[in-house]
Structure formats: C-alpha cells, structure tokens
Image (tube, rainbow, N blue to C red; front, side, top):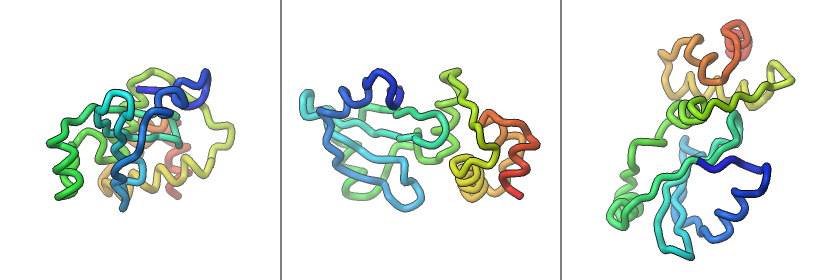
Length: 139
C-alpha cells in the first residue's frame, strides 16, 4: 500500500512506473504498470475516492500476458468493494465534512451496482460512516 499525497512517496514510486494496461470498463481503478528500474510488473488498484491509497501486487510475466491477451485479471482488486476493504484494514479512517460528498454518493451507488444484495450496513462499514448516513446516500 502506498498513500496518496502527504510526503510524496507516491510520486517517488510512480516516477519509475509506466502504465502498460488499463482494465477499463467498470473497473476504472485497476491497471498494470511496469517499473522501468526493476522491470517488474505491478497490478495497481487506485482508490482516490475514500481512503486515498494505491494497492500494489507484483504479477509475473505470464500473468501480464494473460491480462494482455485474454483480459484475465487476478481476483484481488476486481471489485471496488475489495479495494475498500484493503483501505479499511489500514486503520486510517477519513471523515468527510460533507455528509453527501459526491465521492461517498458515487461510491455507495457503485457498491450497490457491483453487488445489488449488499446491505446498507456493509456499505456504511466500508465507507466508515453511520448506517443512517449510508441510507441517505442511497436515497
């Protein structure tokens, strides 16, 4: 995990990365980059809405080939719910000053679209907000 902003660690790390494949479609947060210094391939999930982190997983040349040729991505970051669970696990909780922040509304809607049976309580937990606030986001 690499935090966004702050002391600029993200800028230092990604200065040597070149994006090679974007997932696209509904997985706007997911892409692969290659480090120009070490030649390793990295699958990256970018959460710039809620927890402001990058999540990285090294992938093999064979996995990169499967992504490029067949669109077969490893499972770890395929849903935004999975990405938010990683953010939640860091223990860093951000508070939005605006209860209906566009980032919260859009994310709640995306979570519901990804998994229509997701409970409001689950959405609240993922976003680190109250259940009442989550209800307000979806209503």
